[in-house]
Image (tube, each protein chain N blue to C red):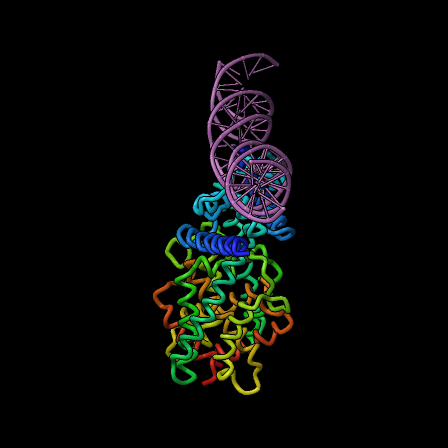
Length: 192
Length: 192
DNA sequence: GACCCGATGCTAGCACCGCTAGACAAGCGA
DNA sequence: TCGCTTGTCTAGCGGTGCTAGCATCGGGTC
């Protein structure tokens, strides 16, 4: 039996290696550079090996996206729990979100810009995605305002953060005033 | 001289045909389906003809994006000028923006999701893009609030709209509450 | 009106992409 | 040690964006 266990362990290791390498190439040179040939060469296996782990490139992107969602949820929770008072919590949350997006652009792309074949806002949405939304909801519901549906408010706040993240990253917004925009967002959207 | 003029006219016509066809295929089947072969076949010319008009596929996307920016600017101005009072103007602007994005998803993708090789937030930003931002600024500066830089406020408002547009389109936000989110956005962000 | 020549669009092909069929070898259980 | 399963590789398919070089068409000149 231990032979089989060893094989499963090695297989899991290789799967992690594939994801880590895909992420590495994507952060270095963008997702366009993550070709199955290049990825296979970097992990020192042939192309078809990738397809014994994932259905195709899309599923690799999706797997990286799930990793990212988990990381982002953790980052948001850590930042919010280290802050005192509703205002500080919301500001910390917003900064943590934008900071994660800025520091991990390729992962953020996998989550929201590219097609990873993931379901959203549905029953079969993967747990990490639901949990990332939950991390926002936990810290935003206290500033949603009276009589406002917390989920709806969280969606709006999230959309604004997402807009700031993507437009900034694409060079559509001058980066030097990012902090002012974040503060204005918190000031206006949150009911403090 | 008239011969040369005729040729130039025919050439301009064909360029318009290329863009209209690219846009058509993109709206029908997405930008991935806009291959140079398919596009060439639809306009009944061979592939290399495309390259006598545009440097490559990226430049075609960029040209469609500029068309879209002009259309969106017009839509926003029309909606805002038909409304009475600051609040109605801002609401009309937001609805017009989101409506344009929803009705022309491929064009919106060309503008913001894909790489059209365009410069943004810089001196050499193409006029239509600057003008589209100006259309937002014109109607938003009156609700930016005292002592708030109108440009910065417009950037934030735009980012929020962009976030709503992209997340809704990607199925990340349930579409049934779109109107409530829009109203909440206007209520919270605009100083009325 | 005939001819030359340049502009213009075509055929064919490059290197690369995601993905897969089928050959082959390694390593297990008997 | 043998047979077989399991897993990996080589090779290749149809597609992509893009381009070199040829052929042809048509305007300008004599």
